[in-house]
Image (cartoon, rainbow, N blue to C red; front, side):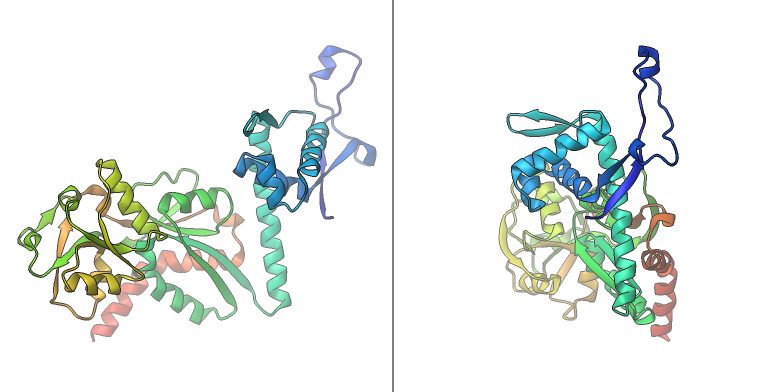
Length: 340
């Protein structure tokens, strides 16, 4: 089992005053050093995320007794209590919170090490974990990633769709290298770069009563049947949450797999739908539906690239970050070229 060697403090028993002081371990005395097992760190991260020893043991493929024993030994090694045991689950102590922060950093760096070495072994030279919200995935991001991958054939990207708040959380928990978010999201502790904007709008049938209005509040649409993406999509969950904040449930008429499918249903008079402006603009059969602006602050979608400090990123992730930061200018140049 791989392990991480760390130095710890030695307390003198001669006086109570000495007990409160830290002693530097002798540089060549192995008996004055403790070893933290990486499996213990991963187990502790699972416990912190599930707040349950039982579920963490299952995730770590070990028995509950073994997991409990590992935690007890970890507390003995560190000389402090890491968990509060409760009737239903556990809670982290202050020391547990501190260990969680460092454990995630260690495991993230180890993950980067494995990826870099594995990629060299199989002939690749980079792998990037990118989490993004629905609006960016349906907008310019695919074009940007396509160009990047063409220019960097030895890099792979694991792209996953999430709500913006979950993207930020994944970055802070080291489950993602880069993220694309929209809206007013707390990004404290992260580097933020502009990526563009793509407002959400209301698409309605051409003969719908709302076509006479230039703007509508989302609240004015809650009596209508909505055509949306499937509930598993980040945008559908976000729109449902906005309705619930207004004290209503969104009336789903149909749930589709793509924005093109949504717009086809709206053309057919099935209902109305909230879609990114770019999706409505790209839809080929224009003219059979109308677009009405949403007069809600959350509909104004400024897209942002978020990441941890660049120095901690793998080389491939840093390269993709630099590429995406420059993308707004690159995209404008490509758009001008296509118009020539």
